[in-house]
Picture 1 (spheres, rainbow, N blue to C red):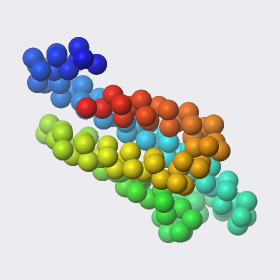
Picture 2 (cartoon, rainbow, N blue to C red):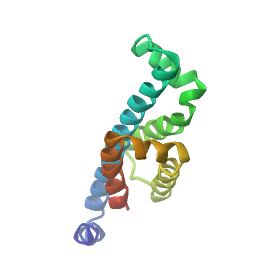
Picture 3 (spheres, rainbow, N blue to C red):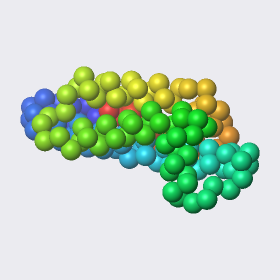
Picture 4 (spheres, rainbow, N blue to C red):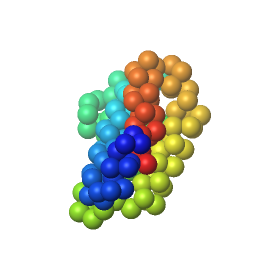
Length: 137
């Protein structure tokens, strides 16, 4: 990591490339966490309310049902990261720091931490996300 930073200081284009790649890694890791959270919450929901009718019904629940509302900020952060990565201009450190801070807050909520204790799949995805966040500048 230190070597990449020093290379980036001597070559700003390389620094931006490394920075962008690390943000991509965070994005991919966050998507994996989100996917596992949805699966876990879906199982809990179905135990309480019965089977969900299919992908369309699940999407509607994700967007509208209060049971899934705590996942929406994570969905929004993924969209924002996609938009940030699509921009041709260099990544702004302040925006990256803001996203990182929000993600850190999302994975510290009581609901998230409870699922982290109950699902090995969430634990594995969480571990990858923590590593990616740790590597982010």
